[in-house]
Image 1: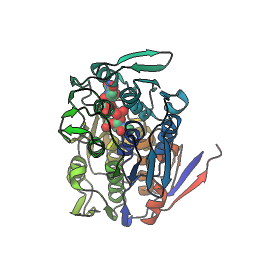
Image 2: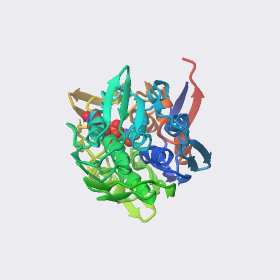
Image 3: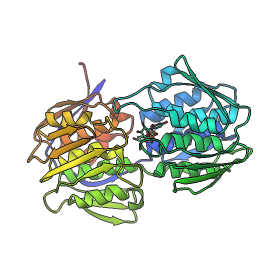
Image 4: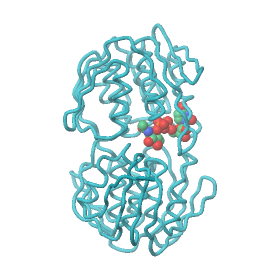
Length: 423
Ligand code: UD1
C-alpha cells in the first residue's frame, strides 16, 4: 500500500489540465466492448485503476483492449462469455454495467451482486426492475444476478428511485434498450454529463436515442451497433476538486478543459462561498479575493450539487467564516471524511443526513485515512491548506478516480510525496 505525505501551506498557482471523465468512460467502454460489432477507439481516457479493473472485466468476457497513451482501442467480445465474477466485481461496483448489454447482446448474463461500500448501501433494484420491464427474467441467487431473455422488448418505464434518478440504472437500461425490439421510454432518467456522453457515444455507434440531457430518454431499438471513435467528456468532479484545491490554498489556478455548463451547481456554490471564477472557452480561473464565506449545500442529482463533490466542499467550508450546513440526499451515509477532517482541527458535527461545519481559522496536519474515493480527495485538499504535515493512507481509493493526483498538484506548487506504506 502507498500513502501521500503532504506539506501544507503553499498557495497553488498555475494551470492544470482536467482528464477524461471516469464515470463516462466506464459505461462507454462497456458499450464498445459488448454492444459493438467492430473496433471502437476512445480518446481522452484517464489512466485510473477503475479503468484497468473494468478492462479486466471486459477482457474476461472476451473483449480485447489496448491502451496507447490517452486512447483505448476496444475490440468487442467475440465469444459467448457471459459471466462477470465476484473477484472483479467486488473491486468496482460499476462492473454491474455489463448486465444489461450482455442480456441484449448474448441473451443472458451472470454478474456478481455488487456489495455495499464505505458510502453506504448501494442497491441495484432499479437496474433489475428496468431490465425486467424490457422482458428479461432476472434472478438473484448465490451472490449472483442471473438475467436472460431471448429478445428484449422496448417498454415505457419510470426509473426514479427513492433517492431520485439513478445514474447506473439509466446507463444499464439505456444500453440494453439500444438493441431491444421496438421503442423504450425511460422516464426519471439521470441527466449527469456522463450519461449524456454515453448517449452520444451510443448514437455514434448507430443507436437511435432522443431526449439526450433530459429526464425522458426515448430509445428506438436497432438491429446492430458498430464500433466508432469518441473523445470522452472531461471529468466534472476532477475539475471541481481542483477548483476547491485552488480556493482552499488561496491560490490562483486555471482549470483547463471544463465548461460552466458541465458544473452549474458547483460554479454557483463556489461563487456564493466567495470564490471568484473567471470563465473563458478553455476553462476557468479560480481565485479567492476575500475571506471564504459559509454556505449551505444540499446534494441532489444533476443539475443539482453532486454528491461526489460533497466531501470536497465540506473541506472548503472548514476554513470559511461562519457555519455551513451540508445535507447529503443521495448517498445518505457518506460522511466518514468528517471525522478525519476533525482530526485535522475542523469543527464538524453530524446530525443524520446533515453535517454542520463551523469554520475554524486553520487546520493542522495529521495522519488520516482515505475511506473512499472522494473522502480521500478531500483529505489531500485539506492537507495542502493545513499547517504542517498530513499523511494520507489507503490512497488506493484516490487512485481509482484521480489520474496522477500528486503530479498534477505538485505542478501547481504543492509539496506532496508518494511513499510506500509499511503499516
Ligand atoms: C454513480 C457514480 C457515483 C455517484 C452516483 C451519484 C459511476 C460509476 N458512479 O453511482 O460516483 O456518486 O452515480 O451521482 O458513475 N439507487 C437505488 N437503487 C438502484 C440504484 C441506485 O436505490 O438500483 C440509489 C442509490 O443507493 C443512491 C441513488 O439511488 O442513493 C443514486 O445512485 P446512482 O445514481 O445509481 O449511483 P451509481 O450509479 O451507483
